[in-house]
Length: 300
Ligand SMILES: Nc1ncnc2c1ncn2[C@@H]1O[C@H](COP(=O)(O)OP(=O)(O)O)[C@@H](O)[C@H]1O
Ligand SMILES: N[C@@H](CCOP(=O)(O)O)C(=O)O
Image 1: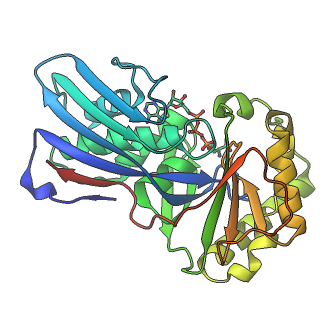
Image 2 (image 1 turned 180 degrees about the horizontal axis):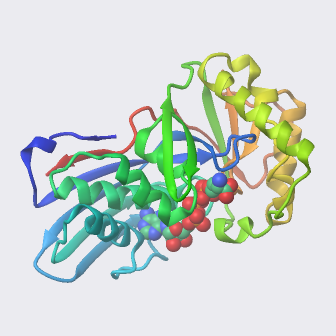
């Protein structure tokens, strides 16, 4: 995360580039996130009054163009925290992150709004930025990844959100299988049980710890490290085809997981390849680099 010229003081306009992310990585439910090389770009400008919003690309036919726009709401919320209250705002959004597919579009939009507030106020991003962004989602995995880039470990302490950033191993090449249909995170969270068996919790703790080693240091461990018992099976009704593909790819030895709350499938490969003969009808396979920078802000 950088604000490239924070010493320059408040500015009238900023350009923000924010990465998508894949949360959970199978075993690290609500804790692990990986930033991906697919970016929304937002230009935010202070104007005398009101909001003027243009949107191109993903979500252009759906998103609100009023004060209720997610980037505006996040910008205003961050502004309250840092004491920055612009009279009016112009936003130009060029969206590349598909909405409601498990690629962290909402977290990216929120991080973009928070980063725009800091940039317009001439401030560098800080710990409070994660706090504001994570409060919109209720979990910090995607928001921390969009903010910091790389692999993130997110956790909560009371009502405070925290994250550390780790460097993913250079050999890791994520392939994303993005389906046409969408699935709302708020809906699939309701499919999760209130309690899980102790053995499953213990399994998850071990595999999530292993995932840190696999993603940062030893990608040969990716298959066992991404095994999950806490969320994917419970959410099957929302995206049976995604879970079927995950299981088939794992039987072929690939570290496939449902990305975030689905329905996209993420495969952590080391060669960018998928096995022949696996039926991927309905999915658009795209190799995406790991984003190592996190959100980028510059004055215009
Ligand atoms: N760039 C954006 N601008 C405005 N709203 C957005 C943007 N990205 C996502 N959203 C909002 O977030 C919703 C998707 O959130 P969610 O279901 O959590 O999916 P995702 O997994 O993509 O984050 C969209 O329907 C839209 O309301
Ligand atoms: N840990 C969350 C992640 C949601 O990610 P999204 O990209 O689907 O919003 C969850 O699994 O609910």
